[in-house]
Length: 116
Image (spheres, rainbow, N blue to C red):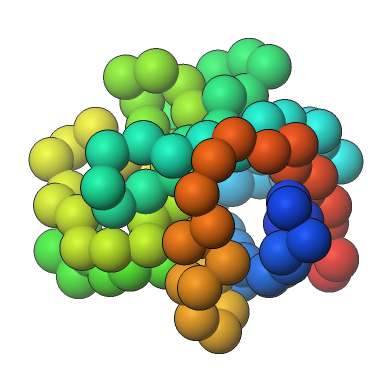
């Protein structure tokens, strides 16, 4: 399954993994959120509620472009640079194409739709 994310005239798709956390996110779509810069390597978007954490598995192949659910705050994390898995992230999928859309600085309305 894929989602389309649109903000600030930027658009990208993410290929999703099949796990309980991703399925819970899909059940909420479409979503209108706000995406904003966080730290030096990601953008985040706060969800209206926490997601099922059943998709938690350890991994060691972190990469820019990963879409994750941060268990600590219950938000989406869109990584555009290197990051380290520390047991607090559930990987939901990966951006198709480059991470360039995530490099636009600022806070913007974000639309997330399921595209199949």
